[in-house]
Structures are given as structure tokens and as C-alpha cells.
Length: 279
Image 1 (cartoon, rainbow, N blue to C red):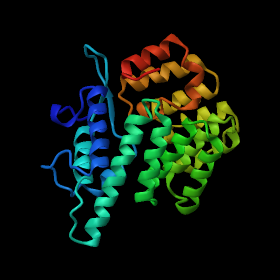
Image 2: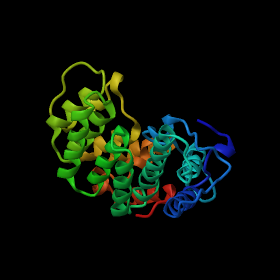
Image 3: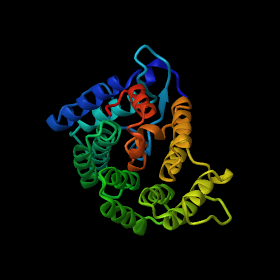
Image 4: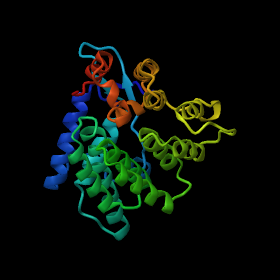
């Protein structure tokens, strides 16, 4: 985990401030940080989740590690419209798409501003329609909006085009599990990993597959699996494990419908307070 003070945000509030500024810069066509080059590595645009961290502090806010450099570079690049060639124009378009994507996924969705997040995803996809990870997380945000048929259609469209994209199968399994469709959930999770064997097509089989040594999920995803099985205590055990281990999935999954039955629990309210997020 990167501990350099210059390469991480200290609180969710700092992240929100820069992401809000990023959006204003995109809308106005201005660069928020003119000293940063537009030549952001292509891997930035394909990042699935920005690493997150939690640590004690006076405000107990959620720390987002590594995001500062990424988001500020994206913001600067997104405002760079003086291009010299078609390839450079394509690069700038891809970076601008990433800026809309990060704004939707790291700011609006955790803040429960779901309709706005979906609008930003659509802009990102209009600029870079073939980005597999943006398509995956658009599908997840449709799930968060409780638009399950559209979410499933989005995943199926992606996997028809890119059938070997493991994150597509992995997160489609969570959409199916959240809908109680465990036969499909187990099948998709098997496609995403390397675990061999057979698992019962039910909630317990899904949990056991998620916990398989060669396919062990992140603590947050395991918490989601226990939540859909109705095991509240195990779900909270793994949510706390996710928080203490700085699991990068926690901020991405915190609005999943599978966790809705937990939201009235004081333990969940306390977690949201520590994450610096509204209920």
C-alpha cells in the first residue's frame, strides 16, 4: 500500500472536492491542473477500482490511496483539447471518458446520487464505448438503481463482445446472486475463476465457491455473498474485515442492493459514518 502523503487522499472529503472540481473543468473545457501532461498511461483508463484505505484519524474518514495522482492527471488531460494528430485526439477522448467514469464511480455512486452517476456513465460510454471495465461498472450501477433487467442486459451485451473478460463474469455473478438466481450466480462465478469442483446452485454453494482457495473473493464481495444468504453477522464480520484490511471493493460495493437489509442496523450506520458517506 502506498503511504506517500503526496500520492494519496487523506479523507473522502478531499477526494470529493477534487472530483467535483474535475466535473466543473470538464463542463467548462478548462484544465484543472495545467502543469500535468496529457500523456496519462493507457492503464489508467482501464483501472477497475482505485485502491482504498481506512485508517484511524480524528474524523475517521475513508482514505482513498493512489487516487490523487490518477484523478488530477485525468482532470488535467481532460481539459487538453489542442491535439496534433488523430491518435492524440483519440487519447484525449479516452482520458475524458475516464474522467467521467471516475466521477460517476468514485464520487456520485458512493454518495447515492445514482441518477447522476448513470448520466456520467453514459457520457463516458459515448466517448469510449468499448471500454470493458466502464461497461461492467455501468451494469453494476444499473443494479444499484434496482434496474435489474437493464443491468443483466448490459452484462450480456458486454460478454457477447468480450466473453473472456473475467470481471464481467465475476460481477454478473453478484447481480444474479442479488436477484436470488443462484444457479446462474454459481455458473458465472465459475467462469470468472479457476476453482474446480462442483457447488450446489444455492446461496451456500455460492458462498463456498467464493471462499474456494483458488477463487477467494475480496472481503467485501464475501460480505455481499453472506448478505444475500441472510447471514447478517457473517456479512458484518466481512464488512469490518474489508474496512480494516483497506479492501478496495468496499467503496465500490457499499450501495449494492444485497446490503439493503443491513442498512437499518446500527453497525452499518457506524460503518457509513467511518466511510464518510451519507446513509
